[in-house]
Length: 314
Length: 313
Image (tube, rainbow over all chains, first blue to last red; front, side):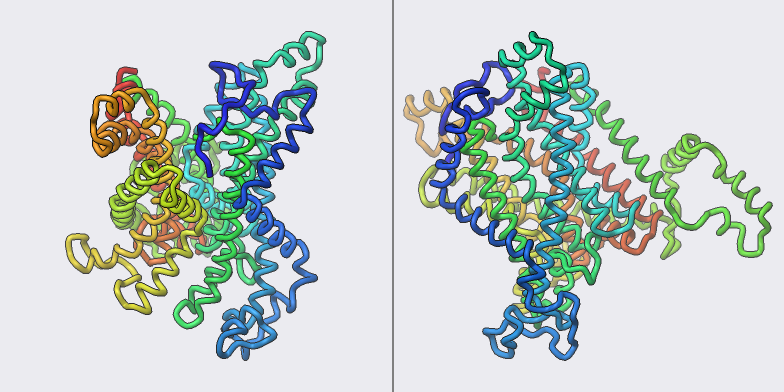
């Protein structure tokens, strides 16, 4: 990974908020620049590897019912805590062994990854929608900027885990409560980033031109401002996804998220705690999958940020 | 300086009200009607109504919120549904261990993170830099509970080196230290990565500045340039980061406490929420939020103290 000073994109307005890359310039050449972004990304081995890992994981999660060799809730107490099939005592039909209730770990991993990803994606999408709307409004309507950004600062300063605790306390522990908490936790970062990107666009002449020809505010925001901020928003959504999934898994691990018997990676790791000393694979395998997913999102997000927004790096 | 602190205090007020409102909300969702419980099974409807009136349960929500604030200010957080002891007392016993754990984690993780970050910055682009940075991305991506589980499995169980359940008494005793070791390694471990990354970025920026060039030009040894001139100037963003990450640390503490049966506020909160002990979870969340606001305030003041530019306002 290269550091900040790798390149200086044109188009940033002096004195304005951190610039967005050249791809944010409206008008001709956009598709050409996009393809150059992809080419740069393709040269980053870590990013490509992460993309491949993520593609495989998403594919597995998507087709869990087709790929799964067993039923995720089908317990068999005679076969409980079997080790992976290549170790001594393992059964050929249970590749990664079985858990404390004799359920097939491969199957539960597939379904668990599904739950974990859906929770994370829903939260990041919802948080991203609300956050980017707030950011765009704050940048466009300067009078609303103060109140919105203050609210965002308050949300940002607050530990995400406390949202999780408070919402789980009010609504009761479960996937629903945790997804809401994760959504709230995702809002402030996205709002800030969107506002930063939108403020740069607001300095551009095309916005003035749009106003001059009498275009409505909504149309300017929707047709011009948003499309030009999308790449920045997208990068941060990727980075946020890793953090959101990690937080969701931690909340599930301490018992506030998905409830048994639902297959969810954090919950699976937590269930495996009881057998840690004689069947460590029950909690290690789901933890490893969480680690892989989050790592892939982080590496990919970092690489995307380097390519698209070199100046937004800290 | 005073202006800065006053500003931070003012910003904390809406947060505080929000937090208290959540606490109040929690006390509202209690499925049982407190008046019915208090009146007992044999009471008539009129009796219950009289008690409701006396308890202020018929007042508008905003008045009830005011009454709740009054009670909280007097330290009355209600009684735990499960142990029936006073919430404030239960909380009082758990705050100390949580602070202990957080301090014990920071005390080794922050210097180590700064050391790694400095090393990586000095060796920029070399193999050691790449390894440290890759490790820090991996560290940030690692679920804290997995790290803790591995420590429990190997250090605690297989090698029997350290205990992994509960608190062993005051920290100045050997047993106390042995008990806090694994939780503090777990919690501090996830903190090294971000600190190292931030130190590296910040130091690289400072190393490119004019005064560093001047120092080098006048023949100061590279060691002195990095350690005395540059590092000191690059630590301010690192301190900001540590302040910003206190919330992250608190989150880690909740998970760590639950794993190692560490008797802190986080474990208490999780236990209370899982067992639907509303009064206790309300109290625990309030305490966690309040201490978070307080720590942030301290970090802000510290920051102003360290950076003359902020102090001058």
